[in-house]
Length: 498
Image (cartoon, rainbow, N blue to C red; front, side):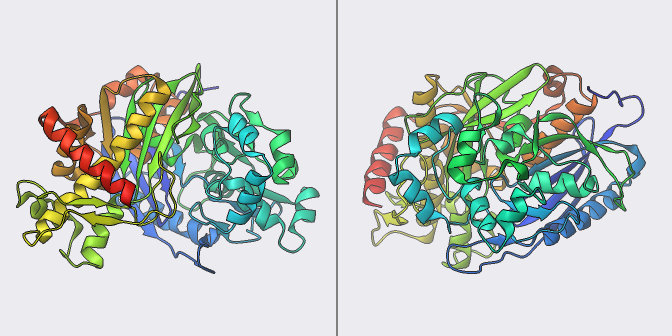
């Protein structure tokens, strides 16, 4: 049941728990930021290809960011309407049900320690059935094989089968901690990233649990993305009884935060990588072009799916120019440097530093720079780097159009690199569509806030939400078809040679 708190409380607390740190925003009903807090935490690399987080360090980062946001906002904790949570998605936590203490470090979505197990399952012919049920390929990126690996350590599997342990993605662990162990629950968007959830039946799958050797006793309840997930209990900065009423994985939250509410609406989040999602409405569209199918959200009266494609490197390419190549001292300087030349001078940068993701899926590909001449300058390479970030998105979005049988009309953008006007204009040019950018680029947190506001009654509907969102600016394609084709031809050749 939705709660009606509008008369007395007008602010939402949004917790954005990311891979390297936690951001907390205090947002009013007009989505103005009253307060912001941020806290980083340590990355742990036990061996090459392995990435872990200490779950208590994550909770400490949430606590510190929460304190900072509330102090900056001047909003009394008692005047908060609800909490929304968004999170790094596939990262796995396993903890003791009695004490709430983790029994192993969290294994992060970037971790590839289960590659051999995934290869074994694929070789055994399990790929097609898993993809049909989950929309996902068998890959160490997703949660199931990570969880199985943890359970195989010591006596953890036996303890799990006795019901002593609880599993969750980060959102689930946060809810457990914030409710003092009273709720073990996740939302459908996060569940859909585990390889254990049937996205058609919207339920945990016994067949998948057997395939991945996961005891049902560790699993959380799965709830819609907006509604009551639990109430705060014994958190020093917050009043007891404050509802947690919205949860979504980070990229689904950004899709919601961009008001991509209609089938065919798409967004791109430009962060370390680039994450593109297209709403496909109530239909889970299977991909035949190298994308994944995922649950977007479930809210009262509506269930939505999305196609998703990721480019592993986006903003990280700019960081490479800054840190390793020392082209500039601040990432924000790249726009002025790139703008100092009229074009890239024929230089093409393929930012495949971590292989090529969707739709190519070539893990052994490597970054390349082609078209160099004696006249090539740092400015040409900088401009070509920004163009490469945009051009790899063309490949993903064209695959989405083929899978969804819909033509892209507008691309909504967010994330740090979306502030770069040169990049956004070039993205518009090579896609041939309008790019729209919101005033607040932290749309993962905005999406969590909107879902929480919908869940607690602060906003009555998606229509009310759309009236709240504010666009910063838009970019229209201006490049000739001939020039676009020249860029795409050079890009496609460079990708083949990467």
